[in-house]
Image 1 (cartoon, rainbow, N blue to C red):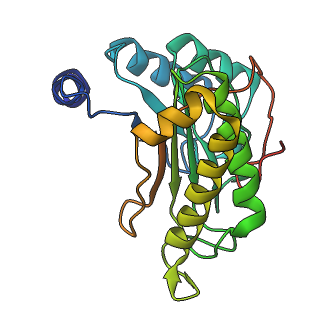
Image 2 (cartoon, rainbow, N blue to C red):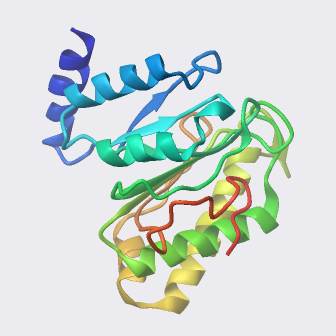
Image 3 (cartoon, rainbow, N blue to C red):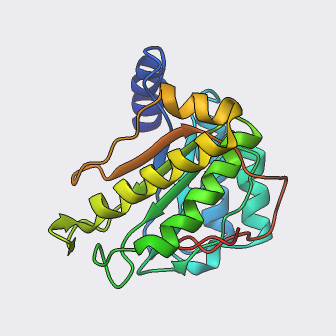
Length: 219
């Protein structure tokens, strides 16, 4: 069985090495919010190992409802904050998971367009706030805009490099556990994985409503 083999065995094996962050569960645009589909998510969630972090990325706007957030909260699954061609800007919602997962897929099209300094400044401020508030939680931040370039760099690398530099400046200025956490865990960004931030962090408070559009959060 796929769930038992992948999540029950393989993910647990990696978890034992302390190298497993969060597992992304991306649902396609044709998978709409229906009672049957919600039941399927609940059934899958009931079989998932509780110690494996699950992040869900919906690709249809019908999923962004209080009912769905309650389901994710009951499963302790994270809701991916995303900016993509299918849903546009998704909300950032605290589902009670111990991590935040962000995926930005391109400012002007699928995998195309850099987000630039303004958006990255806002995201850096938000992530720094999370880290300083509670260094025990995690933030996973991915840029998938790797089919365009800015100043001879892939857009994802340009944005990732700026975000990492700004975030380190903010945490150094803030001091405390957040700055130490970043010093202990280096930032990585590559054109293939586009991984930007894998840092301890937490939402700023128990919010159930949208607190930020995915590409440029309100601070």
